[in-house]
Length: 325
Image 1 (cartoon, helix red, strand yellow):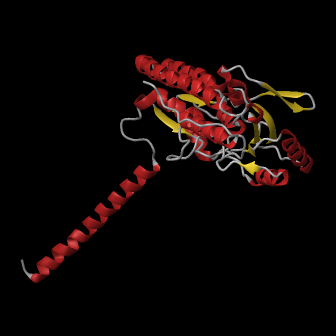
Image 2: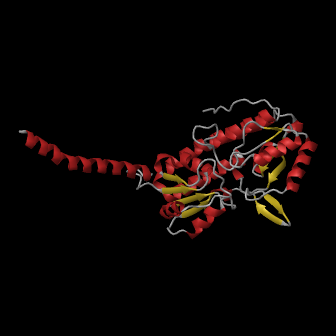
């Protein structure tokens, strides 16, 4: 092959190589933007609103469902504003799992307006709610039902039944996974009770940013002594509200109060400073599990982390949670 022929050969390969590289890059880009992997299209398409429900659903559904969680760890469901991509996800769903009791008002509104033929299951509403007084005679159901591990077990069984209805052929697998998870939750429930009992009785009082721990308090014998805002983080506390909470904290004499991971801690820090009291070094997980790799990146780990934070800050003696197989 002479020099001219070699030159032409190199020239001819250039457009072919360019097309190949373009296809390669395009293929990589498409793979990154589309969460659906080959083979998952035939699996039931399940959408969960909150991170807590998504975690429980993944435990029960395992590899037999294609799960999409709308909210990301650390996102506040009370004030979340849906984006167009959320509507598309909901429209493609076979089953939508949401908390209910108006925990995620923006997503509930979008879900009810979206097209598609998805079944809808309000997982939190299988639990009989506590009724909270918002003032001026308005009583509303408290949506934070997962605060009790026993309630979480009830939610797991509801998720199991929803998945079985969607895909009866996988009944055995859903049932077995749910049985294992509810057994772990039963152990967790007993462990939390034991941990709270190590706190001196006078210190078993919880002051937090918003009213998300009523179920936890009722289940484990710790009083909710005060909150900066009510059950929804949409509320904005007044200067008078802050002053009342400061006065209340001084009166009850708890050793620490608590911030939360999904809410800006600035105001509760101000309360702690004005009351002359310690703000616990770790924030509580309230409406969301933690980011992957954190000490609260699953429901069970979240409950363990919260209990450790509460026990250590209020003068108890913490013993790590260990599952017994």
